[in-house]
Image (cartoon, rainbow, N blue to C red):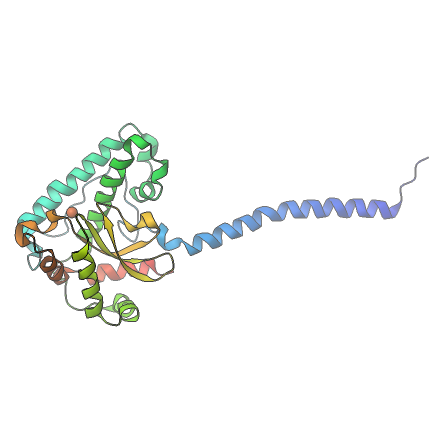
Length: 261
Ligand SMILES: [Fe+2]
């Protein structure tokens, strides 16, 4: 008759228990590392259209201007605002909807999600989604960060962070305007929070948005000629300088607070 050694039984049970414990620990470790890495990149995953929610693409809709066409005439004339909003922005919205028409799965994703993951957008519509999704997103933010009551010196957290990073508002404004003036052709000039959690001035071409590089846009000004040419002709630096007269610091403070880790 075969006898079981108590020592062997002990090691057998201990081995089974150890194997069960090892197996059950693995998903926890993976979950922890995922949650740590998502904390680090959280700024780049924030909604851009507004601090609260991402921009829908099912279907994309032209948001109403939050003020009259002539309300920003300290910097931008009424005719430019009407054309810019009713024609240019509207055509980005229509073109995005047309591009996504045959792709109900993509319509369920937000505009931000589409732009962060362009490689998973079919190649035949990728440029259209990039240009028109970017155009829709950039302009949706643009109307919000301007106000008839805007201008003056920055207040609150944005003022503190600008002073910490650039020294003072005048130095920051000079650097932002210079970057916008020097940018060749169409595009945007931005103040972003980059993946290293630093404030940085960057420019993008066409309608690209900083989320495509993992940064979060806090301030953005439109460098396309359609934004200023009727009033300023080829004098982009003058437009850039006057634009600060309509900057909505309250909204920009909401954006910088949302972007803070
Ligand atoms: Fe524009």
